[in-house]
Structures are given as structure tokens and as C-alpha cells.
Image (cartoon, rainbow, N blue to C red; front, side):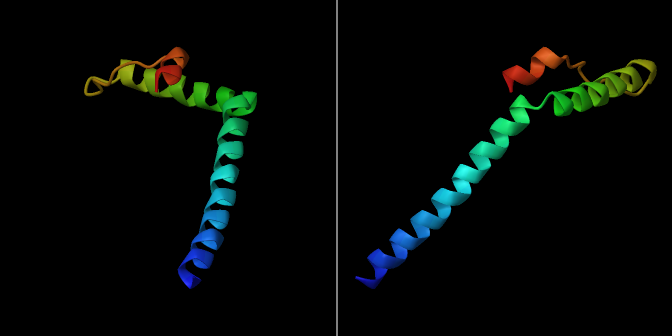
Length: 68
């Protein structure tokens, strides 16, 4: 019976952590400031890749993030 009690406590603890991760991920998806920062990083990376002779990475667009 001790194992069942430990299992219930562990599931309760893990459930709270998963809920926190879900809420945080949703907040990040809804954050306009984060989207703007990621966009600026993306534009900078694409620019650096375009002007570099050794950079052969694929160019990403903000629409590409939705596909991930």
C-alpha cells in the first residue's frame, strides 16, 4: 500500500509540473514581444548567412516556425 501512496503523490507532483509547462508554453506562444525578438534574431541570421560566402544554411521565415 505504501507504493500506491507514493505513486499518488508522485503523479500529483508531476501533474503540477506538466500544468506549469503547458501554461508557460502557451504564454510564450501568445507573447508578441517574444515573437518580435525571434523575428529580429531571424532577420539578423538570414542577413549574415546571405552576405557570407561560407554560410549555406536555409533561410527561415516567421511562417516556418508554425511548421515546427
